[in-house]
Image 1 (cartoon, rainbow, N blue to C red):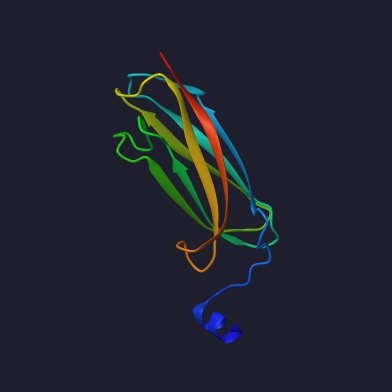
Image 2: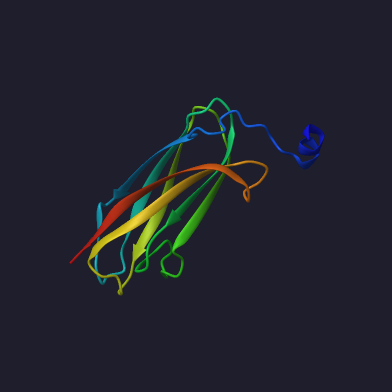
Length: 137
């Protein structure tokens, strides 16, 4: 079995069951206005807490009524970070847009960080966090 794994490029991972990241989120400004074309920035701080480099990607999902582009057509954005070195932090910024059809209320924005092996289609572990975004009158 070891020879086949080596031929296919499977990499042994030392952190098989543990959480490889810490994830911190914040908005600036802290809310959006309804029925206007406006935006805010989601700041993501991702830290690799393991002792090895990890192939990493981050996915940001927003609900209907918001978008991750100015037209509001895309509700998800994936950021591929390549190898995140051990014990390092990475700062990411994603703009979240409201449009004229966005109503007042709270919207859940979900950020998920994935640790991958081989390539971006295979993932070992993930950390997910949801942050409530307020849209006001």
